[in-house]
Length: 161
Image (spheres, one colour):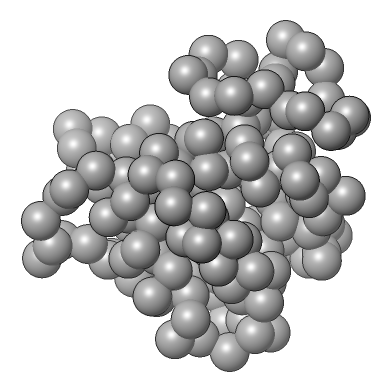
């Protein structure tokens, strides 16, 4: 089964992202199109609901398609996710308005911000992540990701590429 790419919170870059998904032959599920956007908590709740509807051993990649395209085949993404299992794979960026890591995670200071717009892993680890961030009450997905990564850095793979 191809890793699913649930897409939501899509703006001007949506068409480019969608074209890249179709070009590479991904089995994509779009979520959030029929929902009213009420901030990043909306995205986190929608993705959490979607994740909780899947079996724990499925593989999933989430991209909010705001500033990303798919640049490789499903087999490559699946292999990269499985190579890092059971970690939660998160994107890392230099410019972001989130909090820094507090618990000594092995990440260079110039790349201290996680990006809530891309997550990948087994559904089991994604369920654990979304349970944590929703329970935190945080409404900003970047800050919520930073909180999770700070408290669970041993379970997070920081993807700089």
